[in-house]
Image (cartoon, rainbow, N blue to C red; front, top):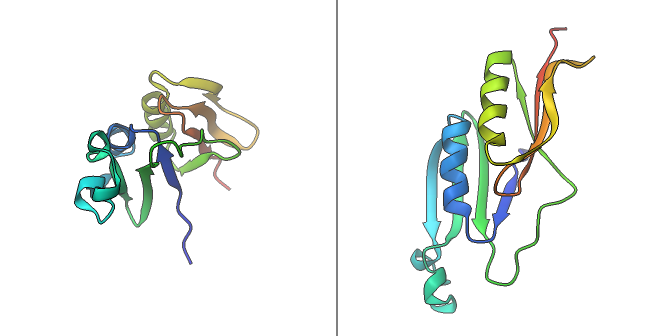
Length: 136
């Protein structure tokens, strides 16, 4: 069994995933607009090029997402996408990237359990936690 986050957006999915691809050093493996899906006939013309499904490959893991259909988007709440990193420099790089034009909720810093830990909501409304644990 694998668990992976599936994020929803209100029309900014493509922009968000291109941003995540850069910040997380991943690769967009698949991006399907509504126009290229069986749902195309059901969608308004201005929504055809919004994203029905995207997969960002991050090593052997994935982050996926889509633009919610018009009128069905709900703001993310009650969760965070958590990244566990081994190197403080990488934690600092990713935190700086994701927090650009976002809101830092807890600045990236050393804590009693981690060399670096921080929390933010990125400019697309996705909540993140960055954790670089202390060696055991």
